[in-house]
Image (tube, rainbow, N blue to C red; front, side):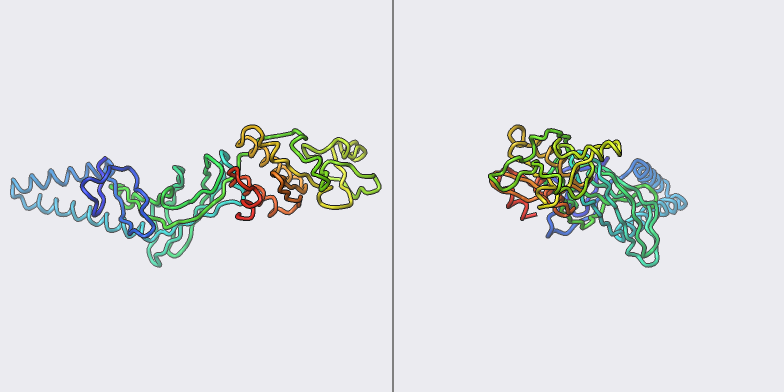
Length: 329
């Protein structure tokens, strides 16, 4: 379908969607003529030619009304889409290859007229807003899947705001002005091998070592990788589910430390995914979790913010200093 762009160069490439402009450039709206609009334009042209050849005043009047109708639809459509303000809210945890719910909000900046037929898309997935009352905000959920871990920028390069208002003759795109950075964590990959945890750390920590029964202060649900020596068999038999002892002492005794070097000995992405799975499982069970990479040790901690920091470190891992990347997060 033919494209029209205001002030576009003759040699500009044909596109189906607008390209993102530099941040210091002024955007121009982009219009694509739909099939119904093409038929309408052809009818207007044919009637205009007939009116000129026949000098029939009624045909002149009909052609004028058709052209005025098309002009009015263009003005109304532009005013409609310019009044839309789009924003996104992303969840704390975003994993590669896993659909995540993204809250899409459209605010009507017009105080007197409603918005109609607004479509917002992110990475090819779209959500439709039939109408937004004056001065109000409507919110809907969009499920988006990111293909890889790492830092991802959400801006007009991958966000589209469009509308077919009012008569479905044209599709008009408009820049959203969105600019937000999100961190995509590695896709969790189940790993039940206890060897993935640190057992000896040059005398600093022994994450799987048992202590005396007199130091037991409680139990928690069993987590994959827990040593069989730490299972509380009486509580397990009474509840029908495996329970692990909690000991009085440092967080390192009651937690686990992931040996990232051992996981990354093979394929890097696979190792990062297994480490991410261990962190997410610890978040579910409330178990303190730490991580060791090269000679750097991040002590175990049960806080959610600590575990999200570990996941961000895994997401931004590039083979360089792991601890420095964590601090940069």
